[in-house]
Structures are given as C-alpha cells and as structure tokens.
Image 1: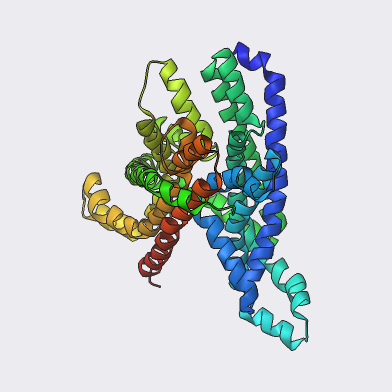
Image 2 (image 1 turned 90 degrees about the horizontal axis):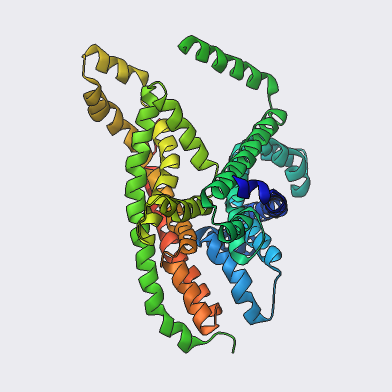
Length: 232
Length: 218
C-alpha cells in the first residue's frame, strides 16, 4: 500500500486528467450526437448520407485505431495534434457516433402525430424540432446516453496509450518505478468503478428530473418497490 | 504523394495475419463470454446465499471498470503471484471475462422474458431443476439472446484492439509495429481501420437481420 500513499498526489493528478478528458469528450460527444443524429434524419440525401457514412465508419472501426490514426497518421497531412486534443477528438467522435444512433432512434420513434400537429400549426421545421420533438425525445434518450457516457468514461483509459497522463498512465508509471503492481492497479480499478457509479447515479437523477410524466414514474417506482417487498 | 501505394500493398499480408489473430481472439472470447455469462446469470437467479451476491458484485464491478486496466491487471498482477500465461491466452481470458459480465445481463433479461406460467408448468409436472432449465427455460431464453450475442461479438471484435497494449500481436499491434519500424503510420493504420470496417460493417448488417427475424412476435 505504501506506493499508493507515496504516489497519491500523482494519482490525484491522473484522476483530474481522466475527469478532464471525460468532460471534454463527453461534451463533444453530445454535440456530435445531435449533429449527426439529426443530419441522419434529414430528408435531403446530401445531408443524411454523409452523416450515415460518418456514423458507420466511426462505429465500425476500433476506437484505439481512430485515436492512433489521429495521433500518428494525421501528421502525414501536416496536422500535428496535441495528444490531449487527439484523444478527446477520437473519444468524442467515436462515442458521438454511437450516441447519434440514440438520437436518431429516439426522434424517429416519436409519434408521427406530433410532427403532423406542428405542421398543421404552421411551425417551421427548426422550431418544430427545438420546441416539440427534441424536448419530448430527451427522456427516451437519457438511459442509453447514460450507457454511452459510462462507456466513454471507461474508454478514457485508452488515452494513456497516446501519452496523455491520465489515471491509467500514472498507474503504469508508478508500477514501473516501484514494482508495486497489485496495490496500484487495484486502487485505480476502484477509482474507475467509483467514477462510473457516480455517473450512473447522475443519469438516474436526470432520468427522474426530465421524466415527461413524473407522477406516472413515481407511481411505477412505488409499485416496483411494493413488488420487491412482496417478493421478499 | 502522401499515400505510398507500394508500401501499403506490401504490408497487407502482415495485416491480414493480424486480422486472423483478432478474429481468433473474438471467437474464443465469445465462446468464453457466452458460457461464463450463462453460468453467472444462473448463479444470480438461483439466489444462493453469499455466492450470488458476490457474483452480482463481480458483474457490476467488471462492467464499471475499463477493459484496458483489467488487461493490465491480468498481465502484470497475476505473474507477481506466479501465474503466467502467454499474451494471447491472457487476452482471450480478459476479454472473455469482461464480456461475460455483459452477457450475464443479456441472459438475465432473456430468462426474465420467459413467461411465469412456464416455470409453474414445470413445477406442476414436478420436473427436476436441471430439466426445467435445460428443456423449458433456456431454449426459450436463448431465442432473445442470439441477436444480442451477435452485437457483443462485433463489439468484442473492435475492443480486442485494446489487447495490443498487453503485447497480443493482433491487427492493431501489427499496424503499430509496422508503423514504428518504418516510420510510416498512415498506410498501416488506415488499412487496419479499413479491415476492421470490412468485417464489422457486414457483420452488423447481418445481426440486424437476425434481430428482426428473432424478434418476439406480438
């Protein structure tokens, strides 16, 4: 354990970097998700087709390959990215491609009647999306978004492979200098677990906060609680 | 010219070898994950004191921690206790155990989807537990599990690139080592990405079709 205590400041810095990477790429992921997801739904083929290609390419190739490509292959085009930039870009675009499918699915499954009502009221397509369709789709998006974010958080560990000094990177450093492998890796496993648990709590809080019909949700929860009591 | 075509063609055979290793890892890992996941799901369902909660915690813990760190743990921690495997075996076990946690959830929802009446009928016929599971419950549960298994197989195929970090010489590691020895990363990395896409895109279309066919009829 002594290595963990001695190197606590280093691990702390690593943890902060991990959180920084997660927050930045999480934000990028959301922007990409809505941009690509909405573009995919467009009736103009020259908007929906590129979005479709983007989604399939980023979902179909490995995240690590994408990260290495941005870091090692892009310089051949004269673009040298900072490791952190490459890492955040890769994570944001990759998880964004997954989240774009969530956006697309949630919006596509909204009742057609809502769109028709908007048209009947003479709403412009942009206003229709902003005021009616997107707000209604958010509750449906939240649980899968939560999964994507937990995935993103765990995948931040890959940034250590492109020399970003995150939690995993620091752990590797401490391991090679002290040889105290077990204590260090168990510590960071627990830290990652706590982070992803907190993220799950945040998601379920958001789910409750943005539930369309909070009373129905409360009744449902009460019922499931009673069923649990009944089963016990 | 940025892209060197002759160099790209010359590295294809090496990359294909790497791809073959990736495919082997995926198939072996899937078999392990499917078997272990079923085992975990049944253990959780049987609600055995101490054992079932431990399995539940294990499943949640594995799902909440990064694959890369799990791989490091297996690769660096186990040898400290005298347990050594070669990188390939370690890789298959790590990714198989990691995905078994996800598979356990899939089986759980599959088992939960079997109507309660089926359990009751099995009880009424006083079928022993093993036959209830083997003849009644699992055949019905697996129907819903098959497409999800396909999805995880594709996911695992892409995730196995992470194992390059513990020196498993699969597609990603091959691309990387070509890059570092020739100082040309563009061609091997681009080709690696294309090879991943060439396998996973048709596979996901196939799984989508399976999903529609196996969808429960309402």
